Image (spheres, rainbow, N blue to C red):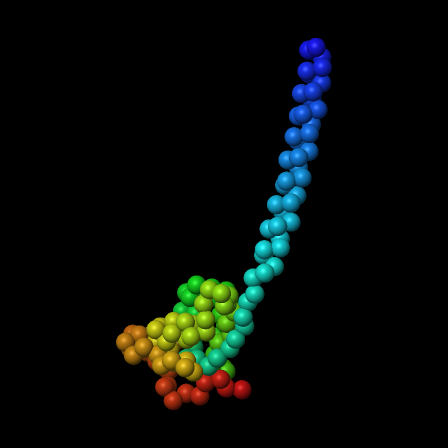
Length: 133
Ligand SMILES: [Cu+2]
């Protein structure tokens, strides 16, 4: 009688182990599918500025917006390329954040107080053409 019981325990233990392995595989497959569904939006728009310090300030302002994954301001063309998750933010929120740091964008004028506290070399000309070719 004891031998039969032992035998059953071994079969049960083996059965449970193989069940656990199957569950793990299913979980991994689900995770991979979810990460593929995140869609990013890429846009560019004009932003005024002068130098490398402006570039840092402008890019940091854009990246401070939740959902923005990448920001790259072009000093010569006076424009910024941004990548963002449009389920988390929108392009106007990025314009507002850059303007709050003192810089003019195509749609929003830079905050005057922030502009005045920029280093002298960064106080760009408000008449500067944006989005240059
Ligand atoms: Cu500057």
